[in-house]
Length: 150
Image (tube, rainbow, N blue to C red; front, side, top):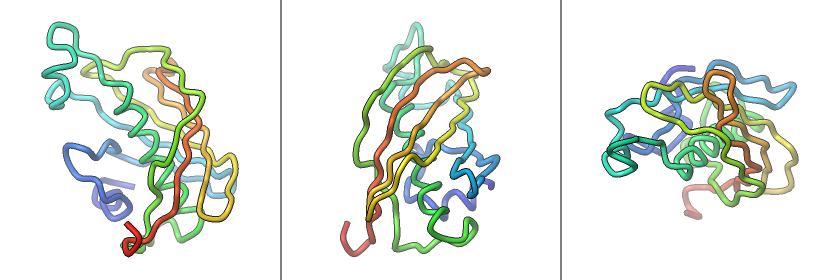
């Protein structure tokens, strides 16, 4: 899934869209694989940190939540058909672990797997890796919302 399809599934836009490509959605195993190319041109590197730029952890979590949101929606619907009035929003995070820095030039590989779903909430186990090295892991909670309730 390329960027134009991703933009149909997520409301975020530059500079807050953190998914560049979805390489695979496996609905049987309820897992998504995608990535973000991390560029020195990212606005957050101007202040975090100019002499040794590191992608902020909260933005790594946001990237994982965006991946989880697309997966949550795809599980309930055709993975290629998105209803513009439904979204899975980042609602919570537990068991966050940062293990490795993400710097300009890295490709941040993202994986989200559905753990459990109940009513309008879904919990995902997510990982972010650089060159097969774990950068971050977390349990992310997403809530299904319609645009009329946002």
